[in-house]
Length: 218
Image 1 (cartoon, one colour):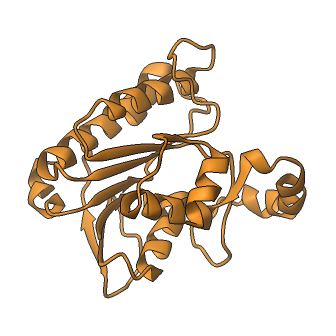
Image 2: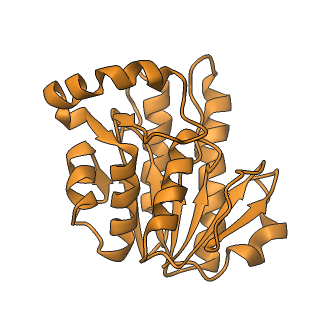
């Protein structure tokens, strides 16, 4: 398969890229970034582009792909709803509209989060915005679309963009895994599940942590 990945300079996207590059079922990876990801591999192509709200100048480079693994995201901490909506809902939907027009047989994988509000009416701002994003992605004419809702994500060692807080939480990972397995998985499992959703499909379009872990080992 040939895949487009966004967010490769973030913690999640970086690991998804590395897992895809190591997977023999993935033939080619293009990463779309605002700044260089500093990853070199024979299967990898990098497209640098500043404005994710206008992709017209790079559209030809996004044609001919089987999947888009959308790992780009921002934290809602300290952000007002209109700005968070612009950087989460508007940006994601614009990218999705562009790639589905170019690749109608594409599978789209979106990383959302545990607690996302599908009703779009809850008290948590981020959860409402993520819920609206999920809902509208699922209405788009992709071959398949999957919304991934991870909780705590345990990173692999050696990644450049691992959040420093995870060095602290990493110590607690065995405890979290033992007592709250329904909320904990590894970043590698998330990446593997995304790849498997493209090649094998899945019976649910919204995947919580137990679904992610089950799909990762199929």
